[in-house]
Amino acid sequence: MVNEKDTNTESVPVRGQWTGHLGFILAATGSAIGLGNIWKFPYITGEYGGGAFVLVYLICVVVVGLPLMIAEMMIGRRTQENPVGAFQKLHHRGSPWQITGWLGVASGFFILSFYSVVAGWAVAYTFKAIIGFTGSPEQIQNQFTELVTSPIDSILWHTVFMAMCIAIVMGGVRQGIERWSKILMPMLFLILIGLMFYGLFFTRGGSEALKFLFQPDFSKLSAEAVLSALGHAFFTLSLGMGAMITYGSYMKRNESIMKDAVTVSFLDTFIALMAGTAIFSLVFHYGMEPGQSVGLIFKTLPVLFKETGPLISVPFFILLVFAALTSAISLLEVVVSYFIDERGWGRVKSTLLLGLAIYIFGLLSAISSITLPFRGKDQGIFDILDFVTTNYMLPVGGLLTCLFTAWVFREADKIEEFGSKGSIYHLFSIIVKIITPIAVIIIILHGLELLPFMNYGNK
Ligand code: PFF
Image 1 (cartoon, rainbow, N blue to C red):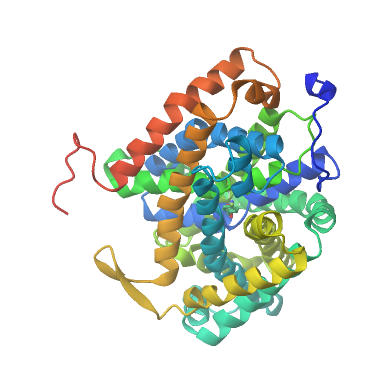
Image 2 (image 1 turned 135 degrees about the vertical axis):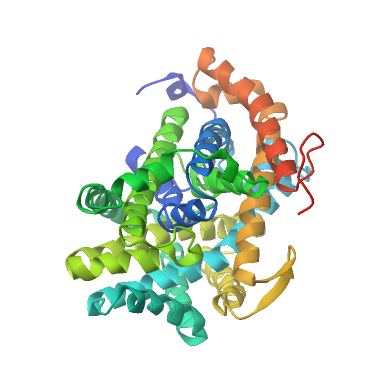
């Protein structure tokens, strides 16, 4: 794995680094794999009608996600800076491109505020699993409604999760997270494989689940579904808000960014598809509705877990919490690293203050009864934040990062970070210059129903 960058003599500031290559891969994979894969992917696939949505999402991962992940890691490793500092360093101090970094810090703040609420539900379900799920399928499903409609419970679990997240980021991410990731990520993988095989071969819903996920029916593909598929590609790969810039900034110089980005994107997609297969097998086995919104996994899986007992359910929810935690700390790390690098605050002070601010803001999402009019109907703050950050803030942040990489990032620096200037680099250049930005712009305009040549009807 020796390449020309080993001979690079440019001095970089002494700053934290992952302990090794595996450490970076696990941390980046840990950031990517989270509630997005196991909670969100199945539920939005259910809402947007299955196969066609999955296909657009997969295309977005390859055409938009992968190139952008490479770009973010390159920016991070080149500058060894937080997202705001990174854009300034590659352009000039005070450069307007720093807005991209700002947008990322804001996205991290807003996303973590509602992410923590869902992660809190996962913590609550860990305890429910220990006690054991009993009763009829309807009774088990009702437990979820009881949890989310009780502000006290939602707030309690949101508090517990944010406290864990703050403690880890405050105490230094690398040691703790790297060490735990090495044990827990492979365990999550094994349990999901088990659940997927169970769903496929031991329930009556397996083949219907595969059809639902992989047989596209384009008549179900609304403009909003296409936009959400793009947004989800950003969300699930932790892109468009500088998380991979931040993690890339702790990366050693002699690793192949392209290989790492391919590995992280592949693992992330694979986990989402496994989770989807497992969950929809159960949905169809029990004759449930696929479009069950945010409650999907919390309503379906416990019905199965009643049969399997705590031996499977307790590890599953513990791992779900862990997957959420490794993602949440990357969200918090983006916000915190900005205050450490740019404002000169200490790690403890920035983590505590920002963590507290996010926690307080998150209370608005935890109390599901607070609603605001949004896109023609009353919606909870939770849904509004999720929709706006995922479908607009991340894609716009990603678009700006892409344009910056294509037209502002110096060619020689890019080649050095990429590790070669052969045909793959040229392909990367063309994609980042032309294909990714055009795809993102078209999809955003389509989501806003503003494309001139489309007939959106009058809905
Ligand atoms: N990728 C995470 C998930 O799929 O759960 C969520 C996330 C983490 C989004 C970090 C954005 C981010 F910067």
